[in-house]
Length: 234
Image (cartoon, rainbow, N blue to C red; front, side, top):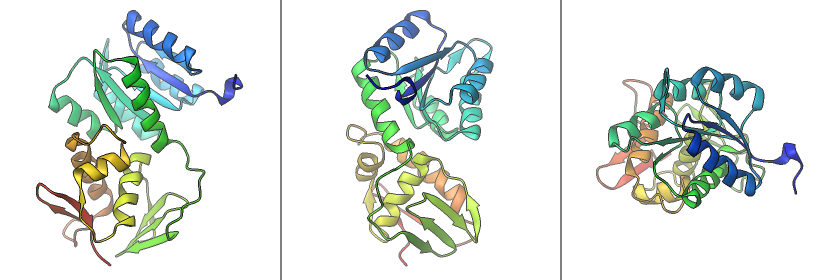
């Protein structure tokens, strides 16, 4: 059994005691450590004190706006965030991704699906310890992408990207000038089983453009309608 501090720590922000018990017991069996918050303010405290590896966030909390809470968590941390909500509408999913969620699940769900999504998210959001086989530093216009350090600068200024944003930029950079389909990017960045979640790519491409492109300047990421995206050629 791994040492307690080696366990993956999950912050579960959920006020339904039945769901809390279901998730906590299943996580414990698989060696995960779960801390629970039933409201937003305690969730922010636990984010600081417990340093979780991943956050499972319900949108419908008493006396808290789930979207605003997601935004606050993302502003303070690069932790993986999976929204788990009874709200299955497309608008809610896009709104959650816009404020920094890495993934979105609709209740009811199976524990197997939840575990698969946690694994896929952790693969992106945990620090990468394997050496980067690609060219270490890539320059595109005034953007400098350091693959090994997973850092980005624009005109010499550091640009903060979340792990998912960087994973998407990495795929575009490694295939600079090539058209990458939605399905390819979803499979490479989010994992198998996500190939139809085209909103994920659209939202995260928009987030990258907002951080990396200068208004009125040349585009960095080009869109091919109904096909995919490519990073501008050198």
